[in-house]
Length: 268
Image (cartoon, rainbow, N blue to C red; front, side, top):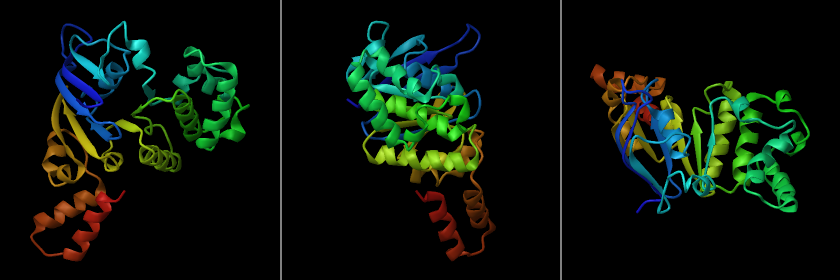
């Protein structure tokens, strides 16, 4: 059994349309999974189901052998953290220190241990000098780092990033992606919800959702050899990949350039 197993999952917000249809997915501990899909494909809904913010119509979510339910959701949330698209939605405290402490307070971690963890994880994400600042004084990238610190302080095994870079400027986005790579190297399981293929290239495996169903589930290198999959799923190819495939279709030989573009697309 994988660390996280999703079996025959169905979900709908109303009786008119099924948002997710028969989702079956297994994720191993330490994997980095990218879940891609166009707007309305159900990818953010899937993230909310995994952390128990929504309840499925049918099917099950099993984490480390424990089935997610109303009775187990509290225990399972100790294992999974989520960073949302808009970091402002996650801030509840007057200061950065308060926000990092919030999740630990819910877990009833002793005050002395909590203070040590606040300092440790603030330093880990490079935000120790901002602990007494108000969240409104931080940039988008800094807010996302604080959100991550709060999750790390809870010592979760899985972190879900739900479109977490979409509101960031290019510099903050690159900074956050570098930090996510570091978390993955340290052994955390990463689930990245995105519509951006360039972000997905950093993952070990790519799940493409289309109209609420899993359209493809494969390693990144396999997916990149099938540009038609992205077109059929209404996803836009990165520029380097698009040029690469245009050159291939042209029929001319540009071996050196093609190799460069291919390596650029796969670059981690």
